[in-house]
Amino acid sequence: MNLFDLTGKIAVITGGNQGIGYAIAEGLAGHGAHIVIANRRAEQGEAAAQTLIDRGLSAEAIAADVSSGSSVAQLTASVLERHDRIDILVNSAAVIVRKRAEDLTEDEWQFVMDVNVKGTFLCCRDVGRNMIVRRSGKIINISSNVSQVIQPLRSVYAVSKAAVSHLTRALALEWATYGVNVNAVGPGPTITDFNRKYLEEHPEDMQRAVNSIPMARLGSPSDHVGAAIFLASDASNYVTGQTLLVDGGSTLW
Image 1 (spheres, rainbow, N blue to C red):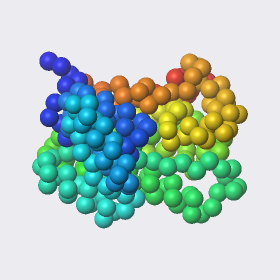
Image 2 (cartoon, helix red, strand yellow):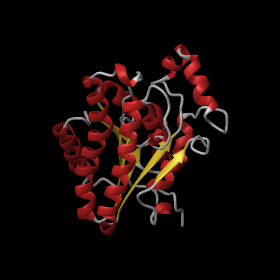
Image 3 (cartoon, rainbow, N blue to C red):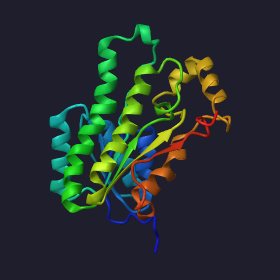
Image 4 (cartoon, rainbow, N blue to C red):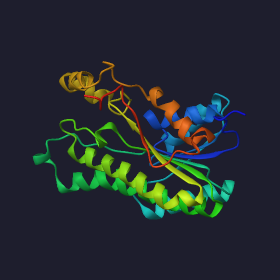
């Protein structure tokens, strides 16, 4: 018995067109899952799905804005119409605003909370309804190590990710009796295409992040794939409500 076999599973991955989301999409597909990449920009999602297909993996893309309830509802309905079920949901879509707290605007605060917290909740709620009926499902929210420790210039982002980890616990408790496992992965500082330019332009911020990690390096998207495969598979059937920190030990100090 292969505990990590995902053959035939339908996995929806928000923000799956780049960074950690794409790495997880590739990892789950490599273990047999059919991937539905959901992101706001249709062309980017389709390109990411095509890259997986070109590698002999099973994938498609559906454009969706996770901060919009109607868009999430349409995404969920489209996947269910095509595949009749959703076995795995990975909520990876996220945004960040790096500013001193006193300089943050109300709009910037709301922007981060709408995508990171509201978007995660909407996707969990709509997909969770189907999983509850089927009495089976794995939900993986992408939180962050800053749900537990704080880094400068990331106040609203840290608050949003703490909310994601707490939402994970709340949903895990409510849905445990329905056979729905809800967990989170908490990446430490990770270099992706999304933040590479910022880190290159702010080497002091990059060095500060490296100094906060006992393993003395930033993560890469591939570092988070194993945790996602574990949480999506039968290997984690008795695990729920957890935020699995994949952070090089940054919360140990």
